[in-house]
Image (cartoon, rainbow, N blue to C red):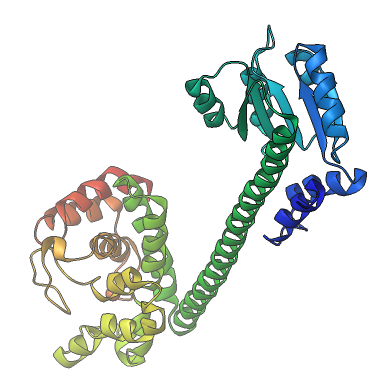
Amino acid sequence: MAPVGMAAIDALATTEPWFATGILDAASRVIESGKPRILAVDNDPVIVEVVKHALSQESFEVQCETSGRSALDALARDSYDCVLCDLRLGALSGLDVLREIRKNDQSTSVVLFSGLRDQQVAVEAMKEGADDFVSKPFRLDQLRERVETAIARRANFYSLLESERRLTEAVRSANEACLARERDLHALAIRSIRSLVLSLEAKDQYTKDHSIKVALASVRIAKALGMNDDQVRLIRLAGLLHDVGKIGVREAVLHKAGKLTEEEQEHMRQHPLIGVRILIPLAQRFPDLVAAVRHEHERWDGLGYPDGLRGEQIPLASRIIAVADCHDAITSNRPYRAAQGTDVSMREISAGSGTQFDPRVVNAYLSIATEL
Ligand SMILES: [Fe+2]
Ligand SMILES: [Fe+2]
């Protein structure tokens, strides 16, 4: 049989654990002294001396203790490869010692022995984390073999725990890297959206102010509806971008002070679809954002455009933007009329509840309109 020191080292080496912290500790104890360290505990001093004498001749370094308390003190001061402990010790039993060890130490082998030939006690001890259970009286050569086996088995078990810990750590790091990449991509997408808004601002000052005011009003309505932070963030972006398609509307139409002709109206009504085409690169990452922009001119009664959706077929973000958009159109100065008060806006939006607008969104708007 290989010396137990080598057996323990071989067991450690089979699972590539040399650089794993816990395994390295266990292995270094063996390497430093050249002998595995045993703590033998029995309240009969004769038995521990016999065990010490027998095992010391078999490549073990053995320390003896005669009570559970002194054994725990010894374990607090020093580390051992194996604790060989009688079940019946007095105030603190062998099971108590085992439980204390296992609270924060999975690397030390624990072999319990007892004069009781009680299978139930043995099963109990193994459940609590003992590596072996030896009945008294035992032959010393058998005891030595059981101790060697327990140390090797524990080293294997611990190396598995370490491998699992390192695997969990590797998965956690990979997840973090993934999340960081996701955050970078998200930040890039947000920067793209900002540059779109800047392009819109460069073309039309009214649309710039309008987009910001619609975004703010939409956020207030969304919060009044109790939407969560993620949904509110989406509403803010959708509010900023809802008219981005106006980049593709002819300037003569966009800035016309008088009434639009039918052809001009039809051209203007294309802006949600132009917006969708502009936002296509963001569609995979922000599908709800693109949908919100597409449907911002739908009506609750189905008479809106571009798809004639009705009721809850219309994304909630679009229903909110529709109300915020109307509020801003009424309360802003236009080339053809001066700004009107919030009271007028509240009246007109209330009148459109259930036809143009979602009644629930209208109620939320009315609850915060005076703060806009
Ligand atoms: Fe619009
Ligand atoms: Fe608008």
